[in-house]
Image (cartoon, rainbow over all chains, first blue to last red):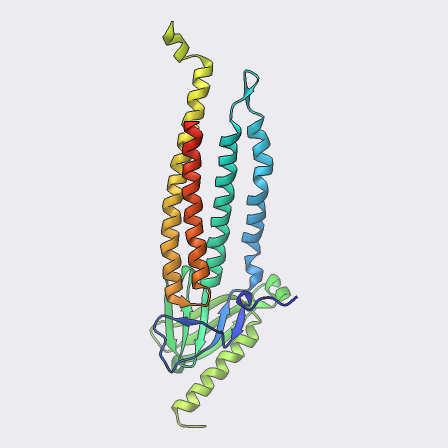
Length: 189
Length: 81
């Protein structure tokens, strides 16, 4: 089964993707997102969250006073509703935090949109000096995920993006894009 | 001996349940405020990174707010009835 494009960690020439302040003659070449493997923690958290009422609710129901249940069924139903509503909120927040934390490579710039899309850094491709990929742990080696570090000559010295799929491919793509940009800006074709 | 009845065990249990229900209303009110704040955050996210799913995310966020409002109403009803 093919994974939907929006769940991919690396998307070349993403459709309908743009960022605040994008120029008319600028194109998004690559969108990088943390690997879907990193969503494992909140996926497990979600399962625990989902299963908890199956354990808690019978306990609440078993509380009796004078032979009668202390909590009426309607209140228990309200508790269940609140619990699953907050589960929905939790999964929505985690998904959106993952979805909106991206690294964009455009024909002009590199843009790092951090968690919650509230902290954004960008640098011109011509400022990029060095691109490094690293696969730090055995876990990362198993899934072929790693970090990308971009050294720049600009004020923000280093851009780092963690846990991306196929870091070597990403490093190569960014280096090639920077090289092409340098050639263009120096009039070499 | 009405005073004794007020402090009877069953009255205390009833008061405890009502306090718990009131506490749940308070929690769901806080959650409602969080849902609204989160909705604002989603708007900022959508503004900073434009994707083709803006309407879907906004819709989900509104649904989330609606659900939290329903939970407040349900807890209120659980106190009344």
